Image (cartoon, rainbow, N blue to C red; front, side, top):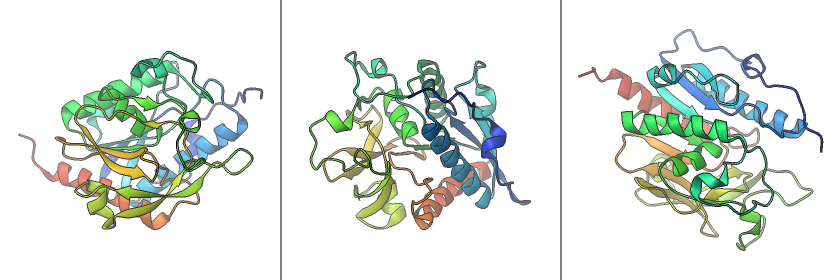
Length: 272
């Protein structure tokens, strides 16, 4: 399939404006363009970013977009100065970052430069105890940033049942999947239920959980679907896509509203 050369730009994803009473600023960190993108992956990434930004606007935040896939380095100081950080999706994480040097089946979108930039942002955020939410690739990078590993390709990992985490070949990418929320985790407390139906479409996932993290959600085949930092105030990673068009808006609102509630709580604490 030939590469789709159109470059995704900020004006393509800002379809809404922040509310007049927006009181917090969120740094949205994302790999907007992948080296081998198709028209499908371009449009998919565009639509996911649009929904995430619109949700932040709806819940009273303004947004500063930081694309890690451009020739210029992201403004790390501006990201750190934001009230909160949202790390979105994109292509596959370079497997050598977690010690996997064999070929990766179904690999796509790999960009080591973007990986290194996002990992630097995540590690700085952990050190600063920033309020951070990580979705899909963002959740995978959180784990790698903490020294964990990934399953390079879930489809070839001999898991049962097959096609639990994404649509089968020839079917839509995304599907609804029930995950188990770990008792005592922040997401279990947030949703108030032992299970949650999420919108999933991934071929990589957390394998060995990184240092300072714990699993917060697990699929029925044992694949880790969410993690959270143990000693930080609020750093969450979820493998699923609450920002996908057919995901539950009610569930997305719960997660995004809590993210911004944590951001506001942090902002209201006077600096020492």
